[in-house]
Length: 170
Image (cartoon, rainbow, N blue to C red; front, side, top):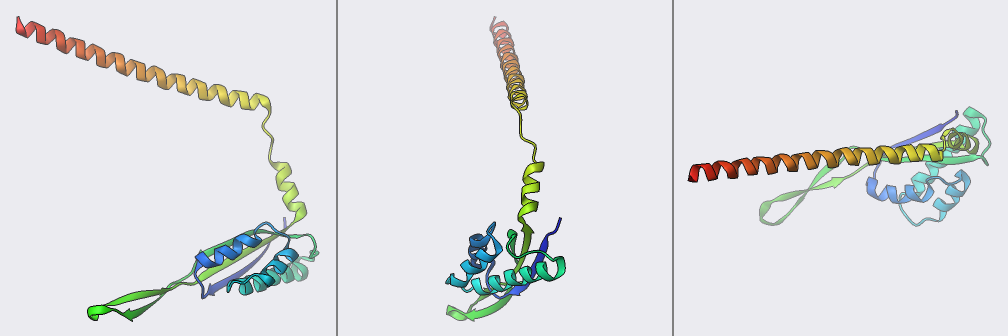
């Protein structure tokens, strides 16, 4: 299983903004992703495009994979360290300015690996589905029995209390 990884650390942009660009290319063909990012009008598009190009180069040189069969499997954008700066405010106070950074990791796989993963997933047969439904019904029946028993116990306690009250009144 060949998964080609490329990482970019300490990108000086907030992860929230980078994730917008990451969502555009997740699951796409690597070449198409580069084309999409080259025309995307976001600041994070350029470093993301360079990172994908780096991952493609790693796949070619290190793993001898063809560029056409590469798909972007995962794109993870995590928080990096936050730079804290101060700005003056009214009445001599100061508030923080959080200059956020991002860590990006891209995993590129081949089309064949994705097909293999899909083949490994066993499909649920009708019998398995029916068995699951029966288990759910049995669980619900057990819960209902417990609820009914609790209500009966409460009624018995209330009846005992009422009978004791009547005895005390006599």
